[in-house]
Image (tube, rainbow, N blue to C red):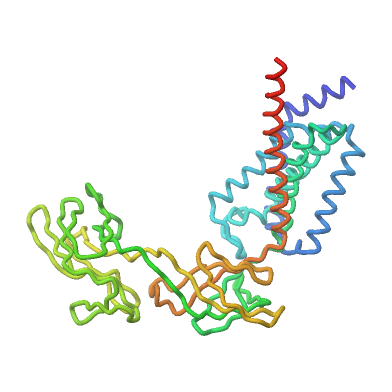
Length: 412
């Protein structure tokens, strides 16, 4: 037993990096030979079977081979460090490189489709194994003091395992709906048409913007490097300074249309844009005047050229709010329901979450259509259960330590 313990200790202390490198090389070879893994083949019920096999397999392997040194290592802190390191590498890559769902991938080794790669799959399986073995190792012999630890690790195992296996069932569609139109289908990342158990009719698109900003930019449209304020919001005729320039805004129309060489205020008209008539005075007392407009599909952009690489302009107003008034029809009850879908205010219907995604940016509030993103993730509630268990275990551990400390203080 002593000799076996020494073997485990040596293996844990000195072979972890080797195991990390071996797993990386093997998974890399598989990636080069077989390419990306089509995770779509693991859709329900295949992922459910895999989940059950993972759970039963980990329990069976642990109890059958728990005295073997490789099981002891997989349940050790050393293995946990390797697993977390290996898994974290791919999470960092996912966070730094834009991920896409369309096929084929455009980067070597599938780095822009990490969840489809053999490297990520290997890291995930290894993490699931070490987490499962670690949880079982602390479960026997059972002690009440271990309950917070077990709840925390069980929740982590559920969140990671179900989150990974459930990814195959996650669907993300884009739906573009014109005003007055009823659409019952969306397009996935590969432009494939997917019919839905619901239909959306766009009643009206609503948008509110922040006041436009007046700015001095270069020929590339980037703010000029000048002292003082570089951007200033305008809401009415006023006088302000940007760098060494004095700008007198003599007229301001929040909703204007072009008329010959001038602008007219026309609130409520189609395709309006903010417009300002300004008089600019430089530090050399040189005066230039003219209209400024950001422009759109119907009207041209107007700027004032101060010099060859210095331009005074009115920036396109940034949206403060945009949303859609819609009517949603469902198959389940053959009814219709009026809803408002906006940013940070999605609607849940027939197992799908409907998000306000985009609109015609050139026309703004006059956009004739609205773009929705529809997401279906049937395994997400189980992932939330795992996260809740993690939180319960963590809070329990904290309160248990506080209680233990108070008891020790009373005894002392």
